[in-house]
Image: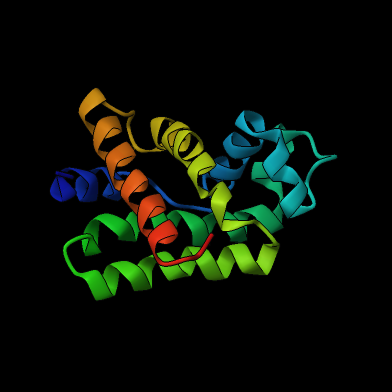
Length: 143
């Protein structure tokens, strides 16, 4: 069972600013270069991503979607609504929902850099939370 309080506290440690918002996509494109195509970033050096206004804006949105998940995991209606934010974002940029499972390691890499690190317990709980999200998306026929 996911320790939502642990994850809420961890998410609160991420200092989400224009200087840190692009880190998630930088990590995503380094770890999964195939994901860059969906964001029209396949020709960009991932190290330039955090300075791009486009990815600062995407990062601000997508990181907040991740941070909301531990807050709503115990309420089915709010959980589905929180996950629909990812669905809407992915539809806007053309990312197939089945690729959501590629986000976990990039998210954790960004957390490691800007949320004071990631303990084994935090990592296990984030992985469990995001695996549940992915499984629920499949159950709902989103991919």
